[in-house]
Image (cartoon, one colour):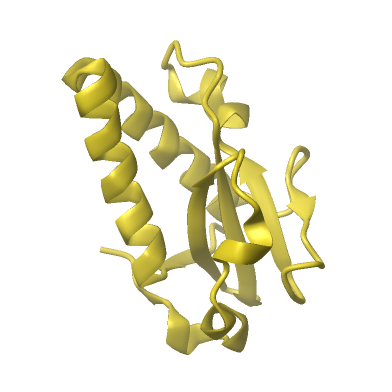
Length: 128
């Protein structure tokens, strides 16, 4: 059974920023394809948060993990092979995964994970 995903405000802003940047830089078709890839990566995390390719991120806090969006490329049906974003998430409980941030892989993760994300469910909103 897939976990329920809850998103931080920062993660929702990351998704919107990725969308806007991709449209400006590569056009709407590429933005649509990247969005499909991102949705597949999130679905893969919900299905199996500790799947092969995900990494425990103990430096961020207990139960934090990361997952490279590119790992979901084949399952998404897109032709994007070199996606450069990483989903940072935390296992809140047995049924819930909090999506903390979606960051470019060149960013230093420790600088971009707010302390409130380490506190549990209250930092995350219901999936829409």
